[in-house]
Length: 133
Image (tube, rainbow, N blue to C red):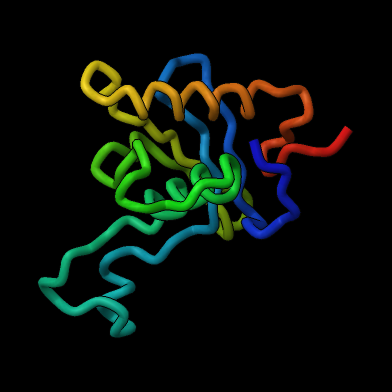
């Protein structure tokens, strides 16, 4: 469990009442159309969800202190954005994120989600970081 400063400013993660579901707040990302219009993405190029990437980086590096490598037990294709809503004036969005349960074939995912649940359930977890006593 990593105690962090604030390298992921503006990101917040809370568990929900359902296993494998999380409430994730991040800055409102560009849509595929916006990325194409500004030249960040070519027409026909694969679009990767910035929300899923932010979620994976925040969970791996920001919360658990682990590198997001090919060995990380949760991959891009394991994460689903179920729904979203704008917060405030649109600078941030809140997302309902689901992690596909692959624990029956991937013990590492079970262990990682257990570690994540411990952090998110800790009384000093404020949604963005684990505060010091």
